[in-house]
Length: 151
Image (cartoon, rainbow, N blue to C red; front, side):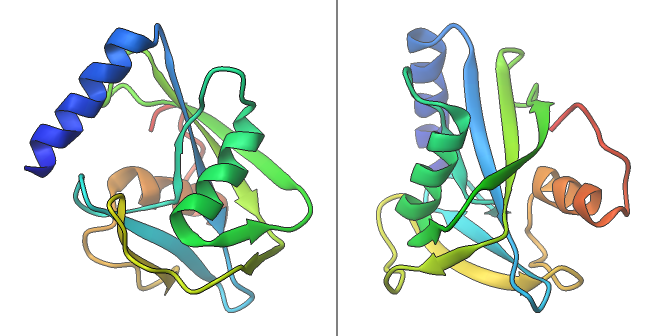
């Protein structure tokens, strides 16, 4: 069922948008933990984020997606870290990665139709099924890997 929903979402984006643009947000604690989400429609742990809608900036989309998915509210500014071509999804897909250094939780998280679970995880002990793209972005941030233009 997850794969079917994922393919239907992707098909809708291919039909409705000439190019897709997404955002992901790296939220870290002072204890060097990172916020990850587990979706209901695709496997693995991901950085929170989502699609940029028509008439929306990438920064606005990042702020919106973060609060919608995790109840984490950005305080201050987001820092744009990188852009990546996500050719695994489509030759037309790109992802902007932001870092959020100041934030607060607005209310406790409750699982919903989109997000099954959220959690803060130590960078050196991520869940086994953390996605390759998520691991790559965190390795780039920590200096363990050079920047890649690809997701």
